[in-house]
Length: 64
Image 1 (cartoon, helix red, strand yellow):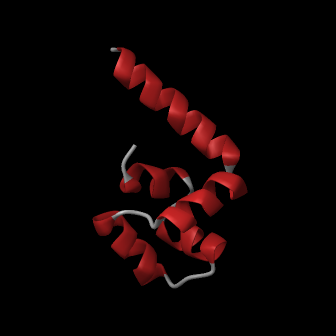
Image 2: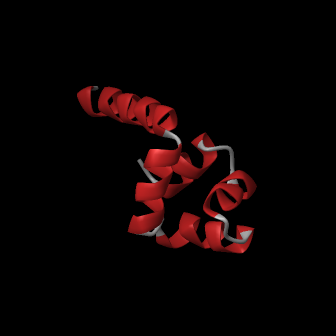
């Protein structure tokens, strides 16, 4: 699961910025450099259903 997939699944750059209370350019940087660990932990707690689906998709890719 890469940062782009995660951000897109969460609703895109602006939605993730709202969730994390940061500016959209910061989230755009995450697409290039990775999502900071603390933010990733927060996002997993804030939107567990999204990560459950992403984890399932990732498992399918690994099994194939």
